[in-house]
Length: 74
Image (cartoon, rainbow, N blue to C red; front, side, top):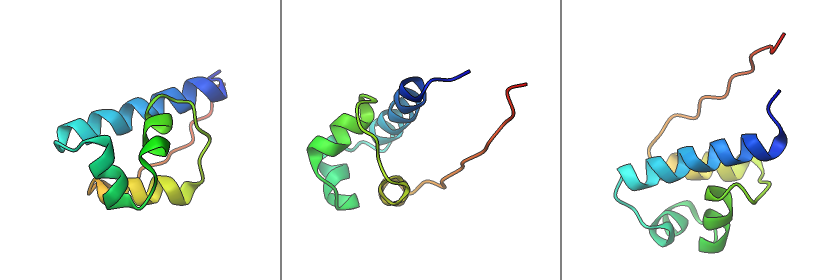
């Protein structure tokens, strides 16, 4: 079982890793995705609930495919 906060932290870490891989600051990612720098920071820390549209905008800014899968845990 993955808690909501664990899932948010996992997503945030992936975004942070991809942002750094692309050589972008949080501010640059925010500008490219059209969201606030504080929101990027909160997402990366796993502190923010977000809409799927926000993640799509971030993925687009990072030039990444968005891969969401659901796997049964039982």
